[in-house]
Length: 394
Ligand code: 9MR
Image 1: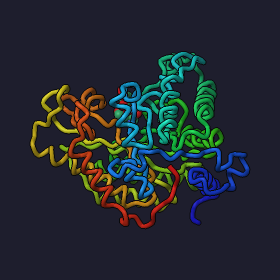
Image 2: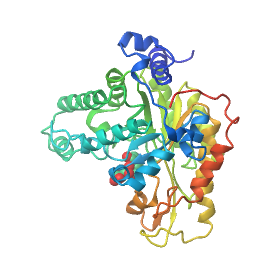
Image 3: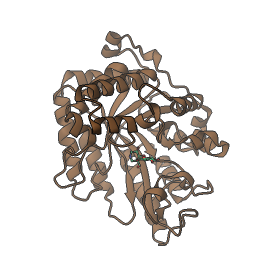
Image 4: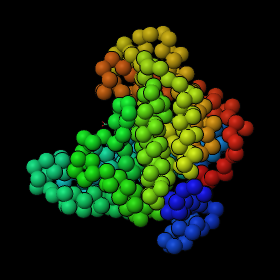
């Protein structure tokens, strides 16, 4: 085995626990048994048209980001429950939300999502522990004005990881530990102006993985970023993340998977072949991969109706979704394919990209779009495509 032992043990611990197939060496030493992480079967897994049921035939979970209204609105919740079997909180596990004031925690949204997942036989992707964005104001202000010292910040970060990961120990399948640290540049690399890099230096990233692993040895620990499977055209960002991941593994850091977000835009080029090759390259390090935030945006008439202004986008949008899921299906180490919200009605896209929308699988009235049927078709055709079919529960 090329890579070092801590990682191998960590990955094995996560996988064995998820599979429920036995007690890994790591689990045995940590006291966490495989049985502590049992994922229920659910009726939706037997509906032959649902994305989650089709995905489970090839051992790949199909997921969506959920925001509170997806859980609270019955028509939305019905789709979330019937089509997807892994959920990522869109915002509810971010530091800004869970600790709005120092030492004052609000777990309402995060607890609701975990509960919803458990009720529906679905898993959870925790998102995200170490990110420059959506930090509490008290923390960013304190760092900026010096009232939070460097050593206090180290302590706050460690505490944040232990409290949040510890709270959901045994109930989170994958954790996006670090998020979006790499530059959109050629060559790429860790952004020296990132809030955390400026405040603590790059060693805060491996530290976060080590703490998260201690807090929940069964969770699969992911590095999550966008444009890290060739979407930048040059492959520079993928090259940089690949090199960094190898270094982390050589140092024994419990990094276990790479999450490529998959935020596409029909106005740019996209190579499904490059995408798949980059996913495969990460797996040569012994890592799993996941598609974590897929959506495909395009120009639309207005943010309310989100009708594409270019008729060709009606073909390009589902096509690019298809390219992504075909690549995910072709890579046996791809754990899950998650969309960043399932309906245009509550997608983040219109609020962030002026004039764009139509990025998801369902229209603003919750009708499935061609992209939905594309994924369904690709999954239906996928039996036999994967090199091996995994038999994970749930
Ligand atoms: O979907 C999230 C949106 O509601 C927030 O306003 C935004 C703040 O940056 O974050 C969005 O989710 C992001 C995710 O956490 C990380 N990758 C990019 C996603 C889209 O911006």
